Length: 294
Length: 227
Image (cartoon, rainbow over all chains, first blue to last red; front, top):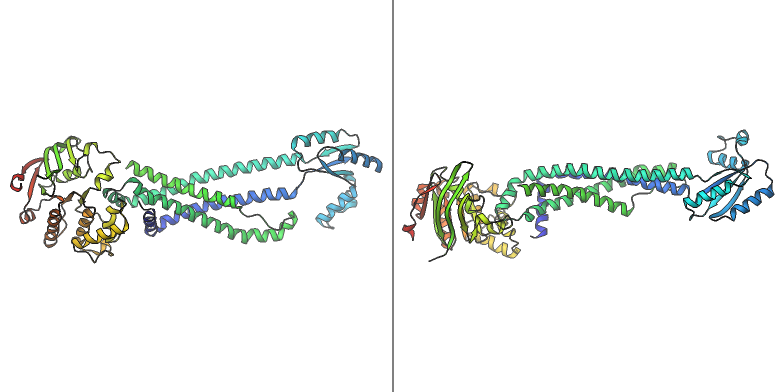
């Protein structure tokens, strides 16, 4: 059969049942919008986390009363260790000044809390350092008598990794749930259309039409609905991005050190297109089954 | 002598315990014009449904265009239907398609080229006297015109057998006569025409072989008169 003819028949049905098709498109669009919002949040979460800590940094808190020679000696020993890129000595005063600069002069008074902070060495690591070598490094530095405590933010990193994993799983579950739920709704809309076209199908069948001839328009309709749903969802996301994210980044992005929030990547858009098509396709398959049963 | 297009041998059709057809045997030759007649419930429509493979016989053998209906698989059914035309009492036209597209439907399902569709559809529309109504929709046509469209659709793919179930049942006498003339014309082109009707008046006006059914069995067949 001529594909263009079945496509034309699909368009005819769009004109005949605009509400049913519209509802299917809106259902797909809303589900993909939820998925799209999640993808944008996930992308920015990873982006912000990467931005906040481009290279791992550790802190070695020092004993009280070390002289300059002892500090330099310790710095050299640490610098000679594998995976360490740079070591910087910071006095309690300089740390408090940094804090004061970050929060603004009026919020932190260095003189009042000076006693809480020891002097420290800020240890900048190479990006190649993995979790295993990080632990070994922390153990080695902790064993030096000049050091009271070592913090490589391993807890935070593990927490971040866990959170990233959880978000990935939530994303997968969300996608699976949306896929199932929306496919069910779309299948019902398609079922209603099938029901309304039952007489037509019966007549076409009596004219000697094969099952493929009868099913092709449903397949086209599914694909068109899927694509239109994706289009609406992406448009809505672009609008949401320009209305909320762009001003948000302008106002608050400076605090996190970013100019703008990340939008969907091309691969994420492709992912959404695929999801929309799969949703609609599952709807079409149920019509296939209904026709097969009849 | 011309070949048999239809052959029924001791055919029975049972719905649960009741027989709609029982022990029916006859054959139709190429280019023959036949009435299947009888009162309501005599089994006329069931017989046509068997010939169009809308139903399967419970007993006996139905052979149409060399295809045994009992053995016809689901995949073979579209091909079988493409060689048999059927005119329904309620026309069964698609209201959203134009007259042209309705008539073109059997050709479309056969993947006929656009040029051939154009040529053949215009040809049959002229034959049924609707050459200038191709762009109209069925709802804008009268009952007689709708039945003409249905006939045009049933013959556009040049079937060897044309079945019609009470084709004049919904028409006034003038339209009924015109439709009958049309069937005769189609038959004269070599198509076997089998019409289920109980309209005695039309059968007398257009005499042909008459197979009369009563309670699912053949009461009479005047085949010999038309040999």
